[in-house]
Amino acid sequence: MTMLSVIIVNWNVKELLKQCLDSIIREVLESDCEVIVVDNHSTDGSVEMVRVCFPQVKLITNKENIGYGRAANQAVQIAGGDLLFVLNPDTIVKGDTLLQIKEFMEQNPQVGVGGCFVYYPDGKPQDCFFRFPTLATCFSKSFSLFRVLPRTRYTASLFYSVSGRDGQMPESVSGSAMVIRKSAFEQVGGFDEDYFLYYEETDLCYRIRQKGWKIAAIPKTKVIHLLQQSASKNFSVSVFHAFRSEFLFFEKNYPKYRLPALRLLQLLGIILRTGYWFPCSLLSNNNSEALTKLKGYISLLLADFGYNKTLWKPKQ
Image 1 (cartoon, rainbow, N blue to C red):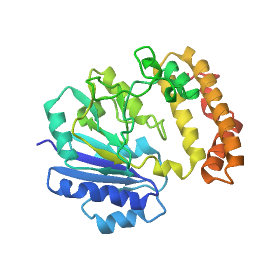
Image 2: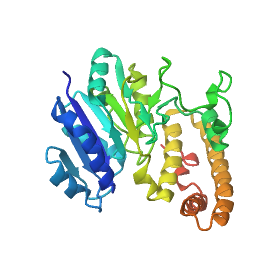
Image 3: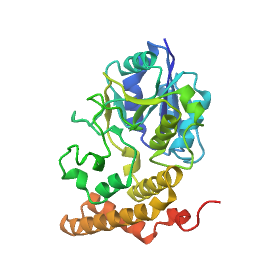
Image 4: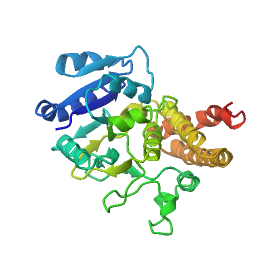
């Protein structure tokens, strides 16, 4: 049976990390698996918790938050598995998901990346299989068209997500619970460390797919995702990196003439969201979510998209 290395990058979500490790540790001990946790300089006692409660886990501790992709690459350097199960710390793995992963990847050697089926805590499915982003999907996202339009063959190009259940092969998968064949990972040089947060998995899938590997949904898997618990602690930083990484993906992988259009769509999207959350914050009696999101989008507007300087000064 193929060895599986479970890789978790953690930052200040101690209790959620413990819950995640509890959900996999029994299956890990009963099968050919290992767990590697990379801690990005947490200050909430995460490191001590892992050392005391899960001594069998391999632990890497960083002296600063070096970003998700770079931390995951650290784990791969010491991973002994042929398969890499990159898992968010705010997830709960259900049933025999680890076994289903190993069996599927063994039976489908042409698959370089597989994604698990991911659910909200209430049991509703999360979007976890995707097309690569395009100007059409960015347009839809900026104006929230995907929330109101019916999904038909005529509107399909406006939707970023795909089902994964109807035989449709995704182009990329959610990084919250993704399985990567180590040989494919090494073939493309791992995660691109220019991405600090978000789009690392999309970029990785893009490069692996270009090498001829397939991207697939793994049946009979179930992972509960509590959704961006680390990122939600600092929304301003989170939203900055979301837009920066989207721009970076286009810059790295698509023709440069698309960048001004992307910048415009991003700007319109941020203005619309600022306009939405401003009255919400006034009417919600100091609702913390409304205020947090309003401050986040205003800070991004004031920053004047400082991340996209390469738009005006292309890389040499």
